[in-house]
Image (cartoon, rainbow, N blue to C red):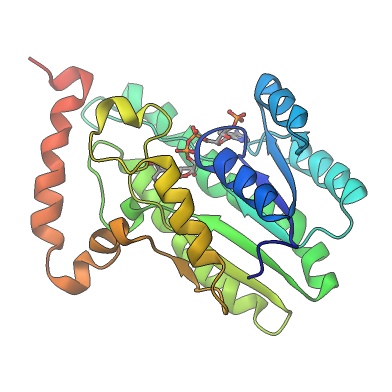
Length: 254
Ligand SMILES: NC(=O)c1ccc[n+]([C@@H]2O[C@H](COP(=O)([O-])OP(=O)(O)OC[C@H]3O[C@@H](n4cnc5c(N)ncnc54)[C@H](OP(=O)(O)O)[C@@H]3O)[C@@H](O)[C@H]2O)c1
């Protein structure tokens, strides 16, 4: 993919990975717009010359309004990144508390992704060229037990991306799945000393995206052990190791 001439929308581009990739695409010469709920973050990005759109991916009417506004301003839109996501801890021994987190996670990470893809599929197919970039996680392939519904949502987006790629075959619209490892955003920098610095991650992602043809999955070096754990026979040991993090759940401390 030539990163210098795209017209890109990053839904979930108001912070973290999405905001950094928006800035990288803009710096490479592409036209960039971002979507999200935070008016303050949108205003800051607007000051940087990035197009901004309010959108809540859990609300179908909001997604439709944002789609109409984006396509009115950027009729040449060719790349849609579905970055919106929440990462919530859940204690499954406390069903009354965890269920709301589970619903929010599925509605944002999975159904939100589907809403955004549905909104832009007719436009990209009608263009006969374009790219969806979906966003999963190493956790889609190797669960992290403190975040069970998060793992389920990302495994689902992986499966959905594979089916979407097959269904769009022949239309000119490709599907690329970005699979981040732990990256130092969204407070992770405070709790996970192993999280990859955002700058390093973004540099590797842009390099992988610029390959021609773009790989179906964007796998930075750090995520390979998660992506291929089952194939490599390390899965059970790694899940056991990652289960030690259950001690971080509030009800399990002390
Ligand atoms: N950081 C990691 O270690 C890591 C690892 C693997 C995968 N990921 C995935 O990468 C993506 C970005 O994560 P991040 O680390 O950059 O976290 P982040 O800084 O919290 O970014 C999350 C983004 O999602 C948006 N969002 C959340 N709920 C939304 C909603 N209902 N409607 C519209 N937008 C919504 C947020 O925007 P508003 O709040 O403005 O709406 C924000 O732009 C997520 O899908 C995450 O699961 C992250």
